[in-house]
Amino acid sequence: VRALPRIKPHGLARWHGGAMRRTMLRWAGVGAAVVYGVAVAWGGALWPGYSHLAQPVSDLIAVGAPSKPALDPLFAAYNLLTAAFGWGLFLMFRSQPAAPSARRGRLGAALLMAEAVAGLLTQAFPEGPGGASARVDLGGALHIICAATSSITSLLAVLLLGHALAAQGGRPWFWRYSLLSAVVIVAAGAGAGAGVANGWAWAGLAERLTIGGFLAWLVVAALGTGPSQAESESVSTFK
Image (cartoon, rainbow, N blue to C red):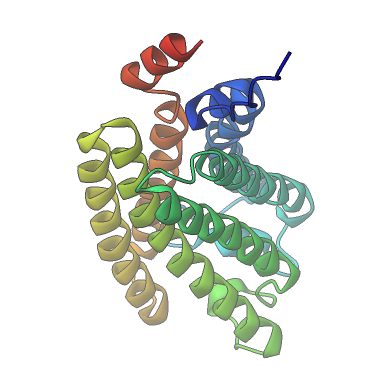
């Protein structure tokens, strides 16, 4: 009897087969946002006199900051969870190589992982004693470079993944939301940079709007990256 040719599994079926593993990784996006928020709130409580309105988050993990020992593990966990979320998205798009959004999705996921690496490096090169108001030494300069890299990669990841995820699941609203998030990140980030450089009283608030825009996007992306109704029906039909 002649054997039947082996049929390769459809891309959606392959995605469905690893759905639980990828779903766990995508939920890391929600965890990352929660861990970051807890870290910042707790750090402020550990440092009497710290101003969330005026001071940047980096001050909380500057050399000599009273909150640094407690927050270093939390911020490391945030960056690792963000990297895990990016890896989960990368696996999802890699399982659908024929999708028109797959290349953008993989690139966006790689940039999200790069953002996490840059975040870890900001911890390896913290601000000097006194935080943002201190004289910038070599470590401080490297911290600024890593922070700038983190900002740029996060912005690009939001745009690329926003477009790819919207196209993948027929969710045009997510692309519009990602564009809005990018506008908030850029506008508030510019205000935060100018505020820190000039010692403005609301610099910390502007930075938190920047970070908050990105963290909110992480949560929405994590909650919205399951299979769309059309994809679920296609998998069921294929089975």
